[in-house]
Every structure is written in structure tokens, then in C-alpha cells.
Length: 356
Image 1: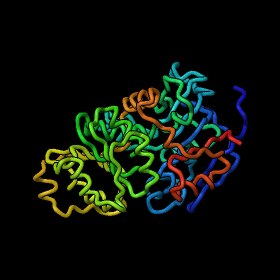
Image 2: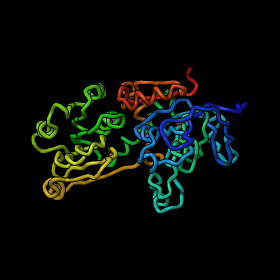
Image 3: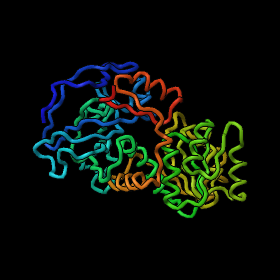
């Protein structure tokens, strides 16, 4: 390709809030690396932490780095050792959990929870991320798209994969399910749960606008935890039994602490939202031990099984994404994009490097 010398990128150069929007050299792919022209990048909750650079960010990232781990782009150049299937013109997403390949997890088909994980868009093992005109992705972490999904939909396959992985762990087929938290992952989980055969989908949040989107996406029942008693409503909807499956996607301590009381005996719960303080169970015997519950947690997506399934669900419109994607800004307007994201005025916010 006739590769440009410089490109625009967001860079976290020093501790502190925000990024520098600057010209940086366009990198040259080496080994099995791919040079990818970024189409779109989606922002998520962890991107807020990285932007603000608080305590959480300092635990999960290393300066310097370019942010953006939910992205899609087109291969424009491949390193000499890249497999032939990663050809110029192919579109890819990035599996941002960069696994080592040699630890216990990696050798037991658990690469997504690698002990020595590096992470794209976090400065861990790579300085590169999606918030740039071009980026570098080692081929082994690049997911080749098999459909003609538009860039906006493809950019959110990563969070859709989180929802898919979570629900696959608790198998909602034939079960009532409560989804706590209607951020992007919780909203995507509504369509995934329906596709997996859930019988009744209950969605809970404290923001009425998000609950309206949950209805659009197929939730059978929505509960506003600010104005309704969550336990009373769940028991009413389940004839006093509690739900058989529960996905906790809010990260709100009060909801996490209470979620075990909402499950029926023999129920299963998966924790997805990130709590910011200790979890406390008020009635461990009645609400946990004597119920014979199954508790699962997840981190990431199964490589690449989850990606294949997520692309299939989005491409066939079994999981709808249009109501979730609310904003698309040029990369140069990243400050406004983060303002919208932090304020809650948007749901899924995208950045497009070549958008004017």
C-alpha cells in the first residue's frame, strides 16, 4: 500500500485525565502483525476509567498507550509471517485479551483468561489501540469477519461477546431470567437470551430511558428500581419462586448484594458488572447455601467461539443493535464523546477516525 507517514491518534502520555490528540508515525507491521485502517471504535465503561485516570485505570493500564479496544477495521498491510487468510482488504475485529499461549489457562483452552494477559487499548503488552487512524494487531488476535456487517454493528461485537459468554455459562433456555443493569452489555444480553431460548426476560435499571430501550429490544417485563420494589416485582412475575437465571450487569453493590435473594432454589447467577467495593450477603444460609445455587463469573470472550456466535446473532438481527448505538463522533471530537458517555446522555458511543 501507499502508506501515509503520519496519522492522528489519541495518546495517554502522562498520568491525568483526557488524552492528547496528535500526529504519530504510521507503524510498520512486523512478524505476524497486521496494519489495520480503523473503521470505527466503540467506547465502554472501562474507557471512562482510562480517560479519567483514577485508581481503577492505574490497575488495568500502563502509560503510554492509545485507547480503544472495541473496534473494527480493514487490513491494509500484513507482516511477513501473517497467515495468508489475513489478506489485504479483509475486515477484522480485535480480541483485546492478548494471551501468552504458554500458561496453564492457554494450554487448557482458556486463553481468554490467560495468566499473563496483555491487553490492546490499555498499554499492556502493546501501545496500540483503536483510537487512531491505523493500528497494529497481531494476526492471532484478529477476528476475521465472515459477513458484511456494517462497521457500527461490527464495532460492538466485543461487548456482545461479553453478553453471550455470560449467558452461555448459565444456559437460559426454558428459564425466566432477570438482567440487572441496562447498559450496553445488559441490553445486548436481552437479544442473546431470547436467541438462547429464555422464556421470560425481566430487565431492571434505574434509568427510565434505558428501560424503554430494553422494551424495544424484547424485554417482557421492565422494572425501575427507583420507583418499584425489585424483589416484590420479581416474585410477582415468577409466582413467588424467584428467577431461574440472573445476569448481574450493573456493578451496583446494592443490586449485587440483593441478587441472591431473587433466585429460586437451584438457580444460576453470573456476575458481569464490576463492583467498586466489597460484596456482602445478608442471609448467606437462606439466600445462597440452602438454595444450592450456581455462581459464575466471566472475563472476556471464548476465543474465537464467542465471536462466531455473536457475529451470527447480530448479522441475522436476532440481536438488535440500532437502539443501543446512540452517537458517532469524529475522533477529533473525543472530548464531546466522553462527555456524552460520562453524563449518561448516550448508550453506546462510537468514534470514527476518518469522519469530518
